[in-house]
Image (tube, rainbow, N blue to C red; front, top):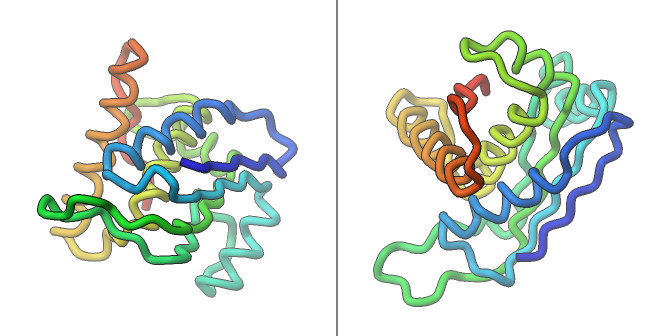
Length: 165
């Protein structure tokens, strides 16, 4: 996988963990190993501008996804997953920090950014959470990916509960 993480936020974040969990999520979803992804970390002002421009909603948000080639996970019958440009995930550490503190199981900004990275990857792959059944599928998959990644690294304690709206 070609994954670029670009921190333009001015906030120190665990870029390696973002890269690692994105790679883990894409492998788990059987995305072609030559596919490309970009993760950009921005401050609240930049995120608010994107949120207004693309969603016509005020204020900064936690994560936004901008798909390119609209890749989807291969079905079980596919021998070879398609390759291409997945797109961009934009993360906002200021919002992530606030959400982590307010979550049912409080957690760090970096843990929230890891969760949001997986959330963004799933959006790029066509998952959504507008309808209750879609939300159950997406958030279940998101939890399984985060839990699997944490387990591989021997991380203890509860995984961050979904705080993504």
